[in-house]
Amino acid sequence: MKTTLLLASLAIAAVASAAGTTYLEENFTDSNWEDRWTVSSAKENLGKFALSSGTFQANKETAQGLQTTEDHRFYSISTPFASVADNSKEDLIVQYTVKQEVNQECGGSYLKLLPEGFDAAKFDGDSEYAIMFGPDVCGPENRNLLSKKQYPVPKDSKTHLYRLTVHPDQKFSLLIDGELTEDHLEIEKNWDVYAPRTIPNPEETKPADWVDAKEIEDPTHVKPANYDQIPRYIPDPEATQPEDWDAESDGDWEAPDIQNPEFEEFVPRFIPNPAYKGEWKASEIPNPEFKEDADLAHYKIGGAGLDLWQVKSGSIFDDIIVTTDAAVADKYLESWKANFKAEGEIVEALDAQLKAKQEKEAADAAAAATETEKKDEEEKDELDDEEEETPVATEAKEPETETETAPEPEAEAVPEVVAEEVKETKEATPEVVAEVVEEVKETKNAAEPEVVVEKVVKPETEPEVVVEEIKKAEEKPKVADKKEEEKKESEAKHDEL
Ligand SMILES: *[C@@H]1O[C@H](CO)[C@@H](O)[C@H](O)[C@H]1NC(C)=O
Image 1 (tube, rainbow, N blue to C red):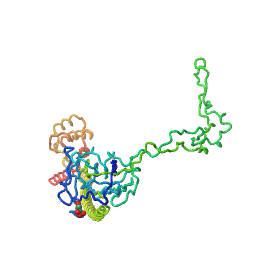
Image 2: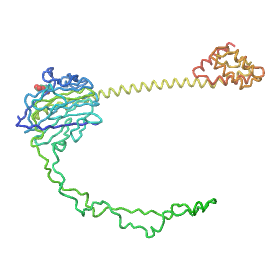
Image 3: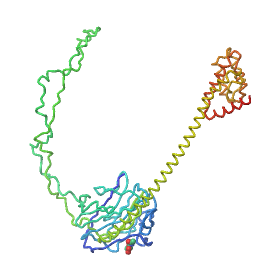
Image 4: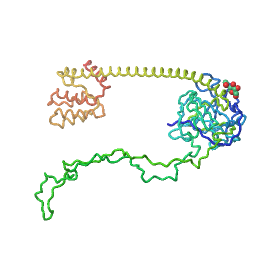
């Protein structure tokens, strides 16, 4: 995102001025601002302005300014000066403050000074203006990039003060938040207001003997004497003629070439050319097109306006001063300074509050996470304990009778099917039993575990083996949270038994 401060100028013929005149002092402390400011009727659906002191402020009364209230809107509003301003003889100060509590993604907050006789009803982006001054924040392109230099726009929720002083001698000064950012810089250095003062002499041509080769080959760097005698490639001495080579049809056999290990490439070395005269340039002569304008940036200004596009609204404009009387501008600068300090303290306090809140939230979240972790850990431990317990229990049970010792398969099976399957098998090997048990478990229909086990176990099969296999098969689909339940069930059964 680029941010710039911009200023455009439009030369208008000027005449004498009144010294120390304040043309506009708008601090929006009263409620009659609408009598002084005219909303343009050039466009429909313009964004609305309203008085606001913002969500935080050092002094509610003085903080009150004119705020843009609707996102994604054009704004056009203007106010006429009491008398026409003329800055041809003295410094003209344009100063105002903007507070942008919500970060401006893309929007202008600049002021336009409008020529004498401007039409407030028709005021819009195409209207002529004398000076356009203030931040224009938009990324990645600046739509109004007129100033050659980019000035950083302060980006925080506090009130910022911008002052442009247009000096009558074609210079300007820039004050941002009381800091002198530009001091009597020539206007023509920052804006292409003039054709270049000089141009390269078109009559001149480059002299024939002009040396413009920057580098030459190093004369001390010579090729080794035998360099050209050593070939880069040589026939491969290892190669031999293939046995099936037929000289008659294939021609005389020749060994293929390989890189000659003796060969070292010579690359000429370059050194700076002692005769180099530099890049040839025609000498500069005065540009016949250049015409100094004695009245550059001398204006007759009839009013001021805000003509903006804003993606994010909420800019509060205040203390708009247009004057040739520095004392008036300084009075507002001083009150801004005090205000800025107070706002800084408020923002700091708010930030501290927010930080404390965030830290508390983070701490609470961390505590909750630890609690959950601890719980999980405990649950896991319980499960681990069970896993350790189960085999012990099985071992202990093994010597008991089949029906008693076999851990119950999940009570979902069709006994008939199991019985059928087992019967078909001559010998119920552990594998077969396990397979059948798997099937039994997959079957959705419920059955008495005892029945299943009974039917699965054939006399030929060792009970221990059956138990082992059933257990193995059973363990696979077990889900952690079922374990406890099962354990309790089985314990309960054993208790009953
Ligand atoms: C606001 O501006 C008026 C002139 O328009 C001035 O008389 C008044 O003192 C200003 N208020 C403040 C707080 O500077």
